[in-house]
Image 1 (tube, rainbow, N blue to C red):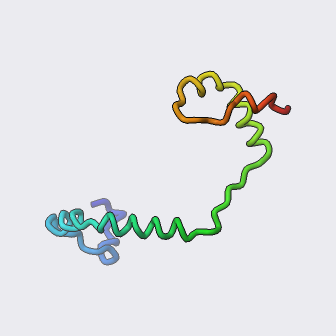
Image 2: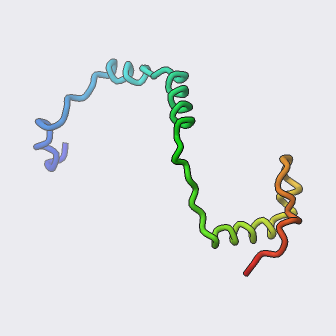
Image 3: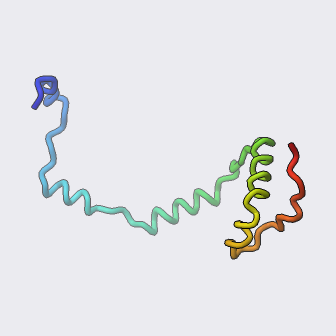
Length: 90
């Protein structure tokens, strides 16, 4: 132990035994219970808001137009018809 750490033992808890450490690793909370709680909280939130600036919308528009050929060819989902976007404002 370094001389800098010699004064710390009174303030530190004793190290756990290997059995205690391994036992604490095996104690896992119920996954379904925590998932149900997260779903409940997600459904109850009414303050969900997304802030997006006009410059961010313009940048997204430019990116969609720039990569529209690769987006349309690789996407199996029905995306917005990129032809309807028109020219991006400067």
